[in-house]
Figure 1: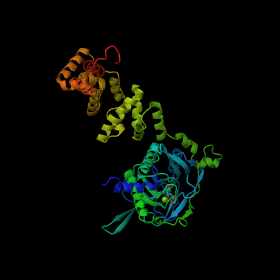
Figure 2: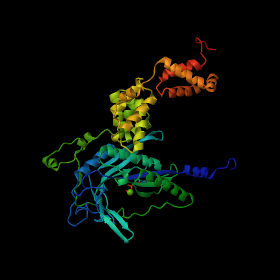
Figure 3: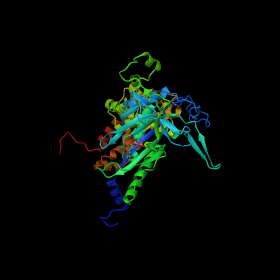
Figure 4: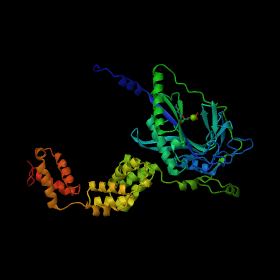
Length: 504
Ligand code: ADP
Ligand code: MG
């Protein structure tokens, strides 16, 4: 390639840099509830087709919706966790469209006034140099649809209504994301919040969370471009890929004189909605209200302040608390909070052992999480309990065993399913640290004698080679030599002595 010319990739990169992508998400989260939003039919993932269908879900004439209180509580909790304003009164609407898996010909949703509006999702990691705050437009309650199964052999479309009418929380974000990776990070954080709240199980592979991504591009400073919608993404990886693919497609199209077309929808936005006549408005008891009269009491309104009091510590608060209290690296804390039960495990080790959090987090993140992942186990299934890990780390910190012996003990306990305590293993294996200076010196002399070339290197100023000697001595001692003493002995023997402190 000639000097000064651009490669194809560089040229593409240059063009791409002129465009900025804008992404907004609509995330559909199934409410974790025993029964559906407006009927008492069960919500299950693995049930024979059409075995969980109430007459209302099949839209039989004369059947009426009865609002599931659990779903209302879930959407309020979720709205509160996202810092939304909760509307004391919200409304249900019918969104009309015709599709085999929507037997009523409409979906009940909240088009005009949703339960929750204007919140913030705090996504871990930096974004334009700051903690990322993604605006939440609203959280609203709606019905899921059934599923169509296309049977190619018979040339038939089969409809399974088990999912029809399951409660969905639709979380709509502002168009503030700029890439597939950012979109995936945002959904992952929402998933974590929903699981922490227990309002949605959040298993994407089972369809609990499905994402529609709205994508457009523009030149910096320009108004928003025409958007397209990529629907029904049910894995973080596909979300990320699909968004990036769509961004590239749009850039390619506009760069070659094409035009972005916003595909017409399967329903007419203006004509497609009407208020749901069979449901009253959804009234909540506001933050500063008590039931004013007997009628309100009898209705048993869902109370916003009662739910606020139930909010658990949320991921963003957990992260800042852990960073504040233990001075830990943010990326480690993000993983600690993301893995189910890992933060609790870490905190228990600290609580029991009263140890340096930086040492504990290394054990928990590298050793424990590593082997858990390898074996496909969850934190709660770990054969080594926090109390026992604390004991092991204490042996290391108190200088009774070296760090390499500590790893050996850990592996041994893992294999044995923690039958013996660390103290017992160390005692029975004779693994405690060797502090006897005579024994240590003998080992050092032995290693030095066997490596004359490296001795020359150290003496001619390659101080790093000294670490190799430390390693060799430890090998000779089965990793049991007191590291500080070994290092001191080797330094005394190999490094030029600086005399009584005169600088030359
Ligand atoms: P609709 O309900 O018709 O899908 P909304 O205006 O409510 O339309 O927007 C839905 C989603 O689309 C929101 O997540 C919003 O952030 C996103 N969005 C709106 N305009 C754009 C745009 N120009 N580019 C990317 N995303 C957009
Ligand atoms: Mg939409």
